Length: 217
Image (tube, rainbow, N blue to C red; front, side, top):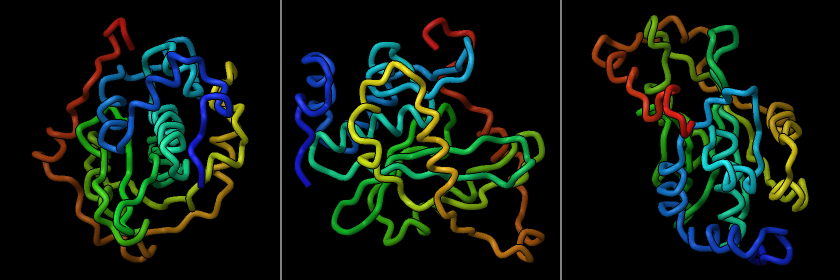
């Protein structure tokens, strides 16, 4: 596929310059890590890449969409994927951007936690990649592990180019992710054999990168 040009994208010269400089998944991840967490203090948001650049903060799906835009500019497919916890357990879905190197999958991830972060391109399948998050994702209050399923990849070209610079919240992207087929990881009968995170893991799980009290978030 071809690279996304500035004219096609609708980005300003400054916006495009920022994104075109993110030439590798590592550079994209480093950029996302530099952004404060979007704590959505004024209400839920699903900001476009343009709005993320303007507001200088992001949460997971916003970071994934910005990463997808940067990948598209370099000529790669702008793919994102939903990763879901068990229903009714009090946690939210997580969204990552996907990339490939040497035929192996990796992931770019915007998160406020010490876990469920960037993944190097070493995984033969998406199932392998998602399984790498399984032992990290648990409730700090109980240690119960949560990761249940993951979606098929969503190619953001499905939405044309308007999503790149939209001033509206992109709820339709979240809806599209939730409507995709999801593959389950744990046979139902095997959940009873899954060990809870131990006290040391739960202690580490309390680490966060950006406090809500930070005025930049």
